[in-house]
Length: 31
Image (cartoon, rainbow, N blue to C red; front, side):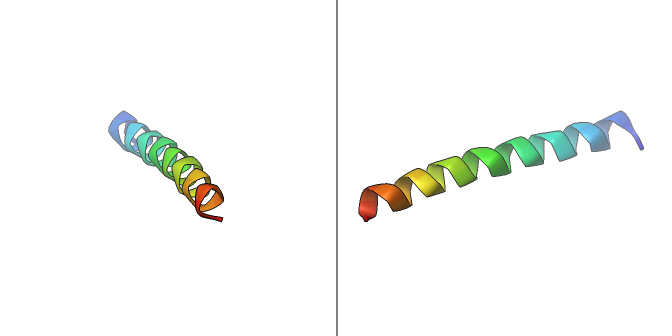
């Protein structure tokens, strides 16, 4: 594995977790 691929995977995971937190917060506010 190249360092670029590992960095990309880490960035994607971090972005997905951030999106999940924001999405969950938005749902809680609507209900």
